[in-house]
Image 1: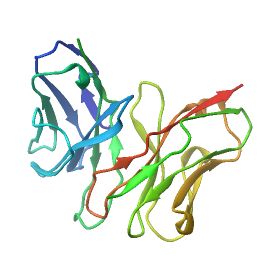
Image 2: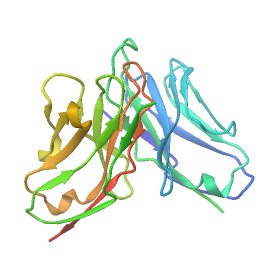
Image 3: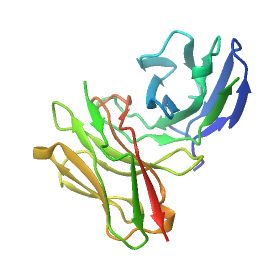
Amino acid sequence: KAGVTQTPRYLIKTRGQQVTLSCSPISGHRSVSWYQQTPGQGLQFLFEYFSETQRNKGNFPGRFSGRQFSNSRSEMNVSTLELGDSALYLCASSHDNSGNSYNEQFFGPGTRLTVL
Amino acid sequence: AQSVTQPDIHITVSEGASLELRCNYSYGATPYLFWYVQSPGQGLQLLLKYFSGDTLVQGIKGFEAEFKRSQSSFNLRKPSVHWSDAAEYFCAVPPGAGSYQLTFGKGTKLSVIP
């Protein structure tokens, strides 16, 4: 079974631009979460999608948004990029059965975003 | 809100030596607890998890962790470290069943001396 894939793997943008990152979960997984990883703040939860609906959201500004498609693939978008948005963005998927239990998350390799 | 503390930012051990990485959590109920490993330039790989039951949990790559409620700890151990274990290790906890919003510790970077 293929793992979580993220595209692109590397991205360079300039301040003020916007960017869209893509995540394809493991087949059959319906929950997709996004995390931002920086040296200063560590790993921080951005949001989680399940069945095309945002189920949880972390403490990030509205410039960060996401969506999930009917095939569970997910995208996240960052508008008006700032230097501080430079980070590794990780996507994780999980086979969520009922929402009443916890199923482990499988992480993709990440997208390294550099903002100049 | 739950929180996770990894007191050691960087640990260096010799190959073949034993290893213990510390993790302390703050959580009201019995938590779910995880240890992940991240090699340079890679995503996170789950080493082991604690949901309930036996407090000594076995994971992949020869790692184990022990849940100690009295100490609010979930320390990761390995009896004999290999050079390939050099990586960054993260302890994590979700807020509860049904939420995938993991809270991670700051991580412990492990260096291995050949």
